[in-house]
Amino acid sequence: DVLVNVGFSGTGGGFEAFCAGETHISDASRPIRPDELDACAENGIDDVLEIEVGLDALTVMVHPDNGFADCLTIEQLHEIFRTDGATNWGDADASFPDQSIALYYPGTDSGTFDYFVEAIIKDVDAVANHRGDGTASEDDNVLAQGIGGDRDSIGYFGFAYFQDAGQSLKAVSVDGGEGCVAPSFDSALDGSYPLSRPLFIYTRESFLAEHPENPVLRFVEFYLDNATALVKDVNYVPLPADRLQAQLDKIEPFLP
Image (cartoon, rainbow, N blue to C red):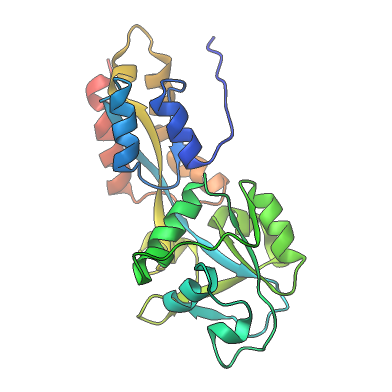
């Protein structure tokens, strides 16, 4: 038997532990950054292996009684979430009511936060920053409860948590320049949803090469062999067959 310790952290915090040699596998909702790879290398970890395991549609949500924010452009999202940005809905769109905006978003250690900063904040203005007011939490359930209980709310997190929330939240379609697209399994799979993104696990090639009966290799093999069913079970989007096979090919050289 093998004891598996599972810790809770945002993607950034997970990479800190991984690059410090404290973990064997790190989940991530964004790719590892060059500075994080440098931190790994400083600790002698130069064999990082990236494995895609599923897809997500980062979902922007408002209170279900919000009758005007059905679709927002990348530029409007930027205006709402950037530092010194919109403080009421009318600032984001002249057709919206003049009522305050209440923000809910993941904490700064979250890969979802990092992804949103790159895809929305920096994409429009490279020197802009994400605003720091509002409610930030690493716990998506806290965000879901906040958005669902605040009529002025807007927030974002992963598609799976939106699915779990049911009718208590309203998803906002996003216009990336080619019309409004709602977050869904299909739009994440075909890439038409502007905020679709891959999900990853990270490990080390040296961990996969350990024998005999390497538990890390066996865990990763099990993970990929069952990825389609497991990802569906938690309301994320499975990889297409060819992309999943490409991940299996990464570990094939280590299999006995």
